Length: 232
Ligand SMILES: Nc1nc2c(ncn2[C@@H]2O[C@H](COP(=O)(O)OP(=O)(O)OP(=O)(O)O)[C@@H](O)[C@H]2O)c(=O)[nH]1
Ligand SMILES: [Mg+2]
Image (cartoon, rainbow, N blue to C red; front, side):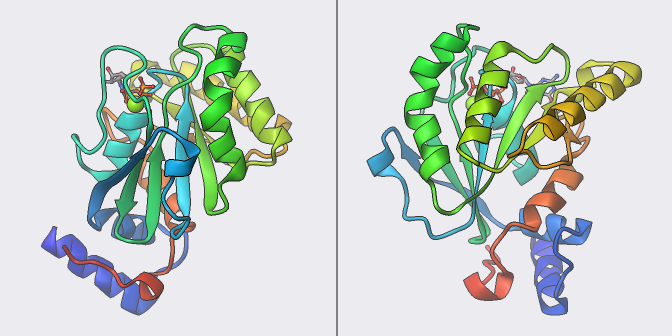
């Protein structure tokens, strides 16, 4: 950690390129900590830091991806049963970026159910959060895109909430199937006006795509100088 922190400080002094791999590693080498949980909109933190929301169906791997990015297995709770994350959990990353682990949608596998459960707090948060820089929309690379995923992407389009598709659990499929999945995800990204054009394929299990995603998120973080990088 000390080496990482020194590296981060060096990158800051040298003015690391936004979105460059080094900037991603430097940011995620910083201290990460759970800071807050919200079950209602009036419990959100003040919108002081740029924020990234992790959204996706129950069990898609949101909490696991957040842990893999932070390099800490136990930061966000993961589970073997769907529906583990039941509130908005806020994680401060080096005082420069807030990562928000969201409850999953689509547990009952019906778009109608998703709307009732998720459209309330979750969607109101995404739509109304002034400091939200991007929602990561996670799709399981091993299974087909569900009606609830399509419905959420429509909602994000309609509310003009900038989102980026991230494939998860890519360790679970062979390269040809992954290539087909990536092509499908890229088609989806092109079809949705609020979607970022780049799709990132990840595995929390093997670390695939984690450096790439770190670099993408580093481009959205507050500058080191503005917040004072914490070397703890
Ligand atoms: N093989 C594999 N399994 C994964 C990966 N990421 C997560 N999992 C597993 O998928 C299950 C769900 O992971 P979580 O991270 O809890 O998923 P979540 O989206 O946060 O789930 P909810 O909070 O219930 O919505 C767990 O059993 C994880 O171990 C991955 O990259 N590869
Ligand atoms: Mg979770």
